[in-house]
Image (cartoon, helix red, strand yellow):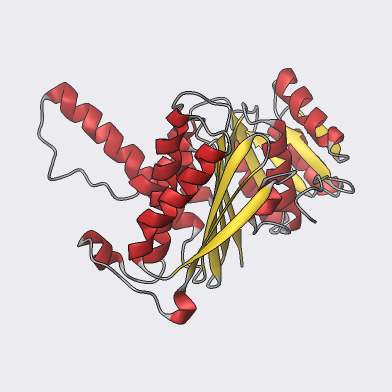
Length: 324
């Protein structure tokens, strides 16, 4: 599939469990427009019945559905059909469910505000496991994609500047340039330092040079609506659990800080920045994907909307694709 081809869900059947008429209508419409088949139910018990009698390629469930909760429904589905992928959707604040996401091993929790292309892309990725890696798959009608090999931490700032210049030259609003820089700095620093075992050097702000087989690849490109970046390391040590745990750490730290302010406490010895980088990627990108092939490669993709003229903290959907 090249970057100009639109993905579709032809031949796939997707079960939607949601007691909201509006949500069922919206998401089933997205699926049908992508040439897929949607089956809708309003409660967890009916969903379990359908899973037992129909060929279902993907389960999509709201968190709060009658009779069987969304998380319990996913667990039940995995017990009867271990290979079935699942997505949890919600209009609630996703951070409230991060502990359950870790406990139930859920890597895709989407805000109901998700746009149609992102929704269809996530469904396609989970069902097929194909075309997950590669920036071009996330930039339909790509105008241009360039790549840079990084083998030293000394290159990080120059790469960021080059991508910033590319964004500015392709319509990215000036208010978005710092956003893009922060996102790329976090992704690239994690890849150069953490992926290859240089965490101590990062903490000490030391320069590291990577071995020949330890290079990091940065790709950047654009289409009519977005600037996209991807950063790939060839170690594949990042995991769904590590990402979710990083999110949890930042969420817990935020709560601790809020409590300290209320109680006038000094918590400087108890507050840690650990996990902040991954959380920033999650909050600051219009769309992002953590794509992992275990012990082989990790690719983080982030998209920034060209048209936005102000810094906006986006919905907190979680998108993690982890392949064995």
